[in-house]
Image 1: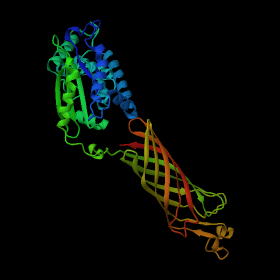
Image 2 (image 1 turned 60 degrees about the vertical axis):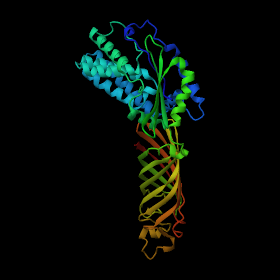
Image 3 (image 1 turned 90 degrees about the vertical axis):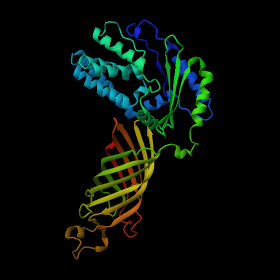
Image 4 (image 1 turned 135 degrees about the horizontal axis):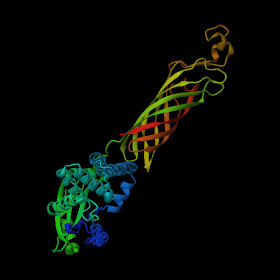
Length: 443
């Protein structure tokens, strides 16, 4: 159930803020009453408007976008007060687009409506009366009970506001308070909802107020039921409306088939890496530095695939047992677990690690170090030569990503592997532990 809208504005009260707006004191009570009646229907699994609001507020990227929109709104006001209506309209138009795309009209309608009102006024002051009328009419569709202080705007702007409200009240389609079917489809997809139910309280002047109910089905992309119901007949009229609507729906499919698959969420990153082998042929540990590029994507909620490729080079060990620095290429892939908690994306990734070693030669014999491994004084039995070997084994990593804005994130990860193939090489060099830190982007 989407938030209840109240189309109870009256053009004669537009510049009379001291007059009470009809029915507004009962809006919260009315929404709760409708919600209780719908929740009593056995065939509906209903999500309340407040739950929708809390879900959207928990989305860090949407909150960040709303903050950007608020900054654009404030900038637009500065331009407007600085007598630059064209630049004000540009900034306010950007703010309204962000508010709409992030569904902020389901969270708090006032910032979005204020942006549209100021956008319409800026367009009007810029000389486009027709364009201003369209925007102001849309603004009243969001907040038809809005009042303005008398003589705050010029008489021409006041006339434009009055004309837009009269046009809205006389021609609006109250069965589409949140937009056309394309936007309803976008809202349903964002909320992962099978259907959307919108309710509008319409003031009929001298006649009793009415409720306009609309049921939109995401699977078909169509409005499947509509009803205009006198407010006094709410208790007796709501249940037959729901029954008629549900009787027209196809039989319920299995739960897995009701919702379309989740949209692909792809995350890529580039990181610096540090590695240390727990088992090595040198007497003291040596370190490796490199860089990593990786990607992961959602398979279903809580599960994701991952793939990473690392290129690193070794540093000298304290006793110079490594005859030369060596490079290696490491490829990791698998399927793992993911959890989103606010601004954090946590992941646990088991998989397979395949490492291609470069020119790796190590020895503890000083004659081999001084004269070279081919010299007759060099004890060849002390040489560990893994030149161009490919090591393969299981791998597990744990990572935490901190979301930065809508798309970017910082990633910190640690991992460990255990090579089991080939059997004759894995005993010499094994169990690499690594740490990564980098910057990523989410599509």
